[in-house]
Length: 135
Image (cartoon, rainbow, N blue to C red; front, side, top):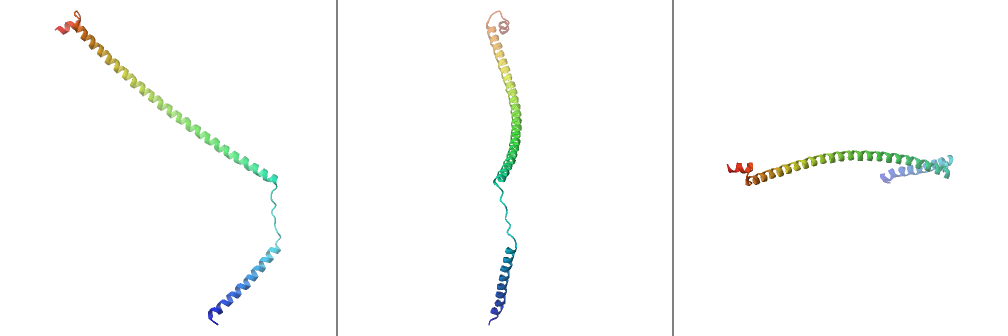
């Protein structure tokens, strides 16, 4: 006999005895304990529970929707205020520029009319411009 055979025989014997003991303990444990059965809920109980879950889900979803609507409304209001301010300022700026342009055009037109009147007056005898142009 080799030393490896001498070492493996007791190990195999111990494993065989242990497996017999484990299976015996398992059989006595299952036969000694009474079988416990869990009663399944009735259809009415299932429907009640589903109804409670649906109500809870509806409450949660409604709260989320209300909060989202309030946030959206606030953002829209703030955006409207900002846009209105920008539009008002832009209108004021354009009105000021338009007024300046009209004023400048009016001055240029008046200056042009004065110089035209002066040129005409220099050619018409008996006017002050004609007398001044002679000198």
